[in-house]
Structure formats: C-alpha cells, structure tokens
Image 1 (cartoon, rainbow, N blue to C red):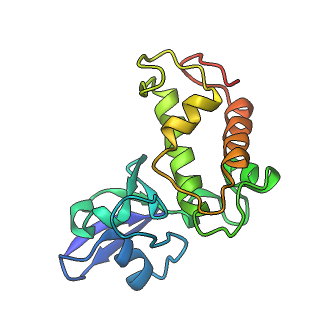
Image 2: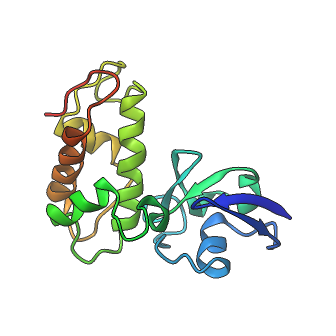
Length: 173
C-alpha cells in the first residue's frame, strides 16, 4: 500500500507494486487525461508533475511516489477555471489532434518553473536564462507532436511566460 496525493486529494493505492504511475492513474483513478503514447519514455505524452517536477509517468512505478504530490492535466486548473498555460494553448491553437496536449501542457508548466528556479539548459548553460524560442525548443524536446503544432506550442509558452514575470529576472522573447 502506498499513500500519495493526486491533484490535491489523498489516495491510498492497493495496486500491484509493478504498476506504473501512468497505468494507475488511467486504470485505477479514472484520470485519462494523461496519455499512453510509446510507453518507453520517448514521446512525452504521459508527462505530468511529480512534486512540481515534470516526469514521464510511464517510467515510474506508482509505489515509488509514496508521499508525493502528483498533478495531472485534470489538476492544473481550478474547477472550470483553466490554468494560464491551458488558456494559452487554446488561444494559440497549440494542438491539432490533441493527443500530446496534456503532456505538452504539463511539461510546459514544469519547464517554466525550471526557468524561474534558474536551472540551465543545454542552450544557455547558465542560470540567467532569456526565454527564447530556441530555449523553449530545447527544454520541450522530450515532448513530441505528431501533428507538428510546435510553432503554436512555443507561442503559447511564450505568451504564458510573458504574462507572468519570471523570478530570476529573465525575459521572454
């Protein structure tokens, strides 16, 4: 048995200890927003936030998350109020078929938190990040879109970043 917090609610799991977090969410918790794409951690469709950090939920066992806060696409907004990133994806048409969208949005939210925390990427190599298109593309490279909505996804992320000041003083361009 494991106790974790899914979208703010305490949940006690009694699943097979070999069950991935992705399968637990979809099959036992009826949270189907998180998608199963490749099931090998290569596409990012299953990305969610684990204690505020983005992870591929197909690569982690649910039991490993004991005591952790899991935030899925269903838990980002407040009731009917969409999260700013969700609104930006709608505004900029950051999706086509929509299959990758939950993972893209969760990854983008986690990525902006990394930027705010001053975590460098391979593009910048330093903590004083200017959030450019190249920076976003590098940081989002683990999330694939088969439809090719990348330009609109980057626009949505830039819009969200511009609407919220970055703690580290970096600018979004």
